[in-house]
Length: 257
Ligand code: NAP
Image (cartoon, rainbow, N blue to C red; front, side, top):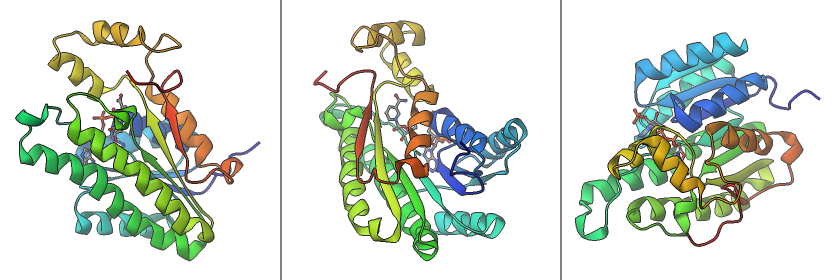
């Protein structure tokens, strides 16, 4: 069966690498026209080119700071001008600045809040205009199991918990316009973000993954494609009755770690 994404336009924030890139690759294979937003203009252009070449779908990379309204407005406008609609949005851009509360500078608190929360708000507030006008939309927000509490990630876990309330409320507001809003809360996914965490804690990436896998029911850490598979389902019309849900994607039932 052909994917309902065929010919739709999908915006993926933070898609130059990691989970966002895997989502963009998967959506392109589903036949969507891809718009990737990321901070590094050159990196995002290169990723878009590689995705277009590999999939045969259209892909556009736009340098954009999701925490800046002018930057987001300009990026969405450019995407809409190129493809004629914005149908799908994955709010994936993210950063970590981990620390215990007594060592956390205000700047690190503010940065994490602004990329995850304000960035998701801004991208959504602009994208939903196009979606409401077309009476069609799929929005997926990327939260984290850290939202349940994770020592040393006060800023990040607070922001990721915030995205869950954002998801539920937005689903209530936008459902009447045929827009689905859902949230994926991944556990450990092997990307540069988790490799940086390994390094900070004094492990090699392989050691850290093996250690973390011991506490995961299916005994492996996640890969970006695991998130892409679920995002692909949630952004397909097959999932059109799934709305306002938070789905934990962590190789097991989510329990206190
Ligand atoms: P990643 O490899 O670090 O990728 C994140 C991307 O977001 C980077 O390309 C980064 O660009 C971009 N970005 C950061 N700030 C931005 C901004 N202001 N505007 C636009 N783009 C920005 O991380 P990842 O592991 O793929 O994570 C993707 C998402 O999944 C994040 O929201 C993360 O919190 C979430 N998540 C990850 C895991 C995990 O285990 N990896 C688990 C749960 C949730 P620069 O490189 O230029 O900074």
